[in-house]
Length: 357
Ligand code: UD1
Image (cartoon, rainbow, N blue to C red; front, side, top):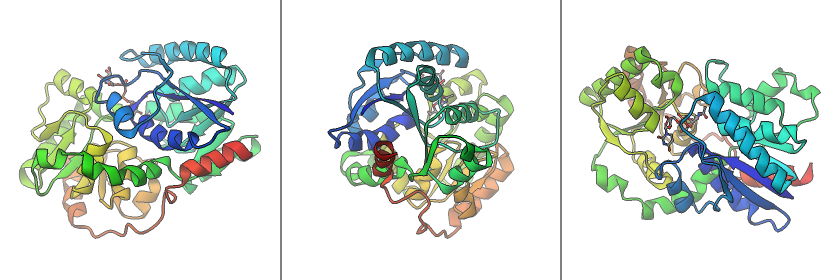
């Protein structure tokens, strides 16, 4: 089976690290990676390939830093050329980025089967570009590889039982990555020495829904500055989008800022933190993998099982709510023993589905 996998944004490199390693163990599978170039800075891309030993992409399309329409359109055109040249049996995409929908659409129009890893997730917020990307990708995928039972139920509620798509709960490939790399990160990362803090909240912030709205970003910045000053130090690896928007809106974050960090540093930052604050999807789960409570600065989450398990709360961009929830979550005792995302065998399960259905 010849598979083309399209990746482009940081979280997709983490997911590919887990699944590509597993593909490589199968002599009857040949995987070719296509990097759209959506993320291109060394610390947003190269560091993941180096540390996690992700196979080198055969194609780098180098498409980034343009509007959604231009980005998706150019990716569609270039991926189509790759598919025509390579003639794969299957195209595989991860998650919900512009690279995801571009890959899926290019393949489907050429009658190439599409596998969507992280299918079925919904925030039910159609203002998020990610929600549009994931709904459209699901609709044209032949294999809907769901990370959770909730994702399966979302698809059933949307009528997917009436389609020919294969729908399976495989567990979450990010759990596989966390299990595998957590053993290596301790020896390889020096970030904890560098930041030199006994207690801190690990924070990330990059969601367009927050960063591109001046009022929301102002509220969040004010909340973070107050928490850092009065409650607990905040360590925040700053995403390039957020950096640009802070400058554009003339806002100042008075917390411990870092450049974007690689996966090993991120795992060590997670392991040693007292709490996680984020608007990322992946980090909400990674907080759970490493037994940390999480305050999510969004109105909705795709990972509702974390809310039901009382290890995650939603605050939106409401300054007072963010501060109050941080105070409570810093001391809330939580149960992290439940199995929400599989047992680190998602990659094996996915391959099993692809080879046998
Ligand atoms: C994208 C995904 C989002 C995912 C996130 C992970 C979409 C619609 N969004 O958002 O779902 O959670 O990746 O990080 O696909 N930039 C750099 N250097 C880089 C990467 C980006 O400077 O290496 C800049 C871009 O030029 C752009 C901004 O950051 O100005 C945003 O990048 P973009 O790829 O458009 O989306 P993300 O916000 O990263």
